[in-house]
Image 1 (cartoon, rainbow, N blue to C red):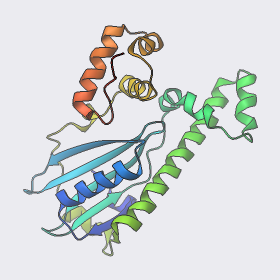
Image 2: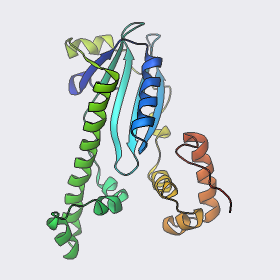
Image 3: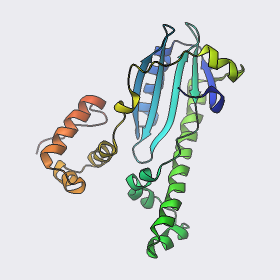
Image 4: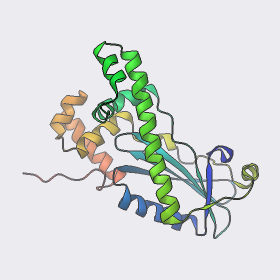
Length: 230
């Protein structure tokens, strides 16, 4: 569960199910580049808390939210800072980072030309961190303006007692896309064929087709659309 003292805190006068539905609809309309992973966990106080993990198609995890009912009509929303990118994240999203480099990014270009991979990766990690933060700020601002989140005025220390502990009935890690899945999702969304994706990932075409089918069942046709057979 998110640490209440280390995040921004809001409340919304609505039930947790309604808040969750409004968030999903708003994100689908305003941020189609976001992959939404919606997970629900039971707790030991007969209440249900929901965590939303928003994964950008090119920048990875950008926003994590915990939705917790404080009573039948008020939902508490906890939003920490965007996850700091790990080194493997830089490798996963390297092509998109390089594609979006401003002309002024001479230090990264020089590091790449000099073969200084360690420095280049460090600088690209900063770019990825900045992109995640910018995305986080845009979504955060939009949520406040569009859904009218109200700042939580109470003492965050009190939330440690008020918020029930998560018993982890659903394993969140297992429900997140793996690095391979994220790459396949990205390439499929860009229009690559299963054969082209197979060549890029070192898999067989049949394996890619099977994986796409499984991901479509898991994430829906909006994120993993069907292709017209020509």
